Image (cartoon, helix red, strand yellow):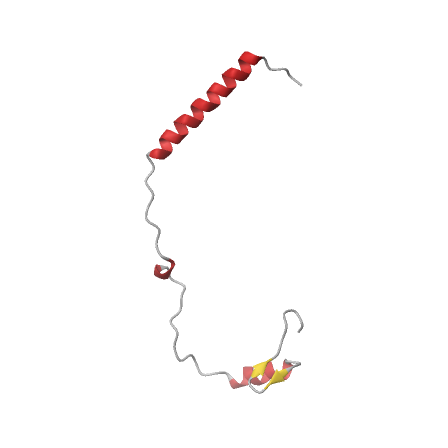
Length: 80
């Protein structure tokens, strides 16, 4: 392990402080763009009537479900 003299420690401290001060001054000049509201971003769908259901898929889904009640599948996470 290398010993560092008190003068060297002061020099390192002053250099680090100078770097941080310069960095903070540079950050003051940065201009940020205004954030867009998430509603403006694509990816949200419009609610509507929906598509016609696929009867074959529905039948297979309900045939595979261990528990069901009329039009609902009764399931817990990671059970089936």
